[in-house]
Image (tube, rainbow, N blue to C red; front, side):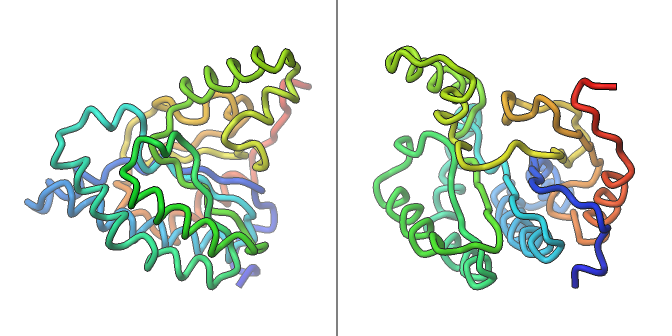
Length: 230
């Protein structure tokens, strides 16, 4: 129920979902198990976010730098997409939300690209919210890509640049939450984060829950966003 949430909520919340591997290690399990549980947490929190009336949620699922991780871990992500993504996104789609992806998806094998396209197409009519998943995403690559397209088109206005970002039809995040105890953005939405409120949680992502989401939204409601003005 919306009444359970703070009355002043963001339009767009973004998550750097950190801590899956450490969560698994603490339980003497492989890192891939942590990612599996982390994807379940993403689904659950997305449903909470949309129930709260927030229109957009972005998540950092796999960065351009993550490709340098051990091949076993990368293969584990591929396996998760192949075996679980469509099932997990079914609840999001049933909720009336759409699912989109930001990043260079050409990196992925053809069968995975087809899965991502199917999820996007199945959810395209959704109007109650947008879940934006970063896969092979890096903000520096995104900025360079957009700048190159502007130069090629001979149009370098701020508006033209923003239209060439992966988030062209998504407003900038009002707040960015990083779990797992680290306090950095790690190449996530650097252009869009210019005036985002930042929250850092010590909670490992698989343990992030509804109560903590409500607590940070309550804190967000108290902040005075001035956008450089007095």
